[in-house]
Image (tube, rainbow, N blue to C red; front, side):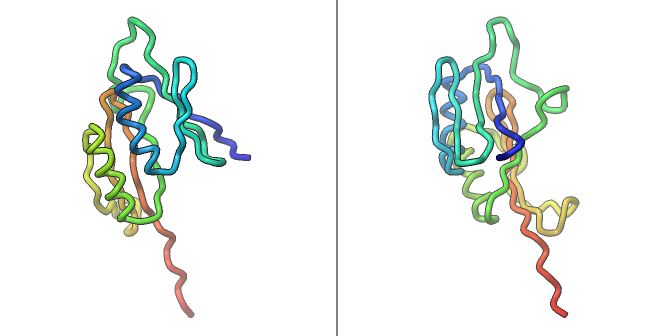
Length: 136
């Protein structure tokens, strides 16, 4: 049983956020589940991602670097998957924060992109394969 069960995210415009999140979450293999007042995506034993509408009077969007949300990273199987998911996000209205590229400050194998939705929610698609075992 995973220790991390779910992540709830508040968004300004739930229907619009669903339109942005669903193509990305579906491409990651998650199934959409609609509930009263929210929507979630689920996949086997992975943590559930839930979107909730902002309460009336709350202001948005979230501003990166302020107290609260930083980003959620999705580990994927290849650089090609990072590129594919980045393109899906762009086609779904996300904004590119950082296009896919290597991040040698993390490791010489770390390849990632960062995108942000209209509510200021930032996600990362990343591939960081293990270092090959040294023969000998």
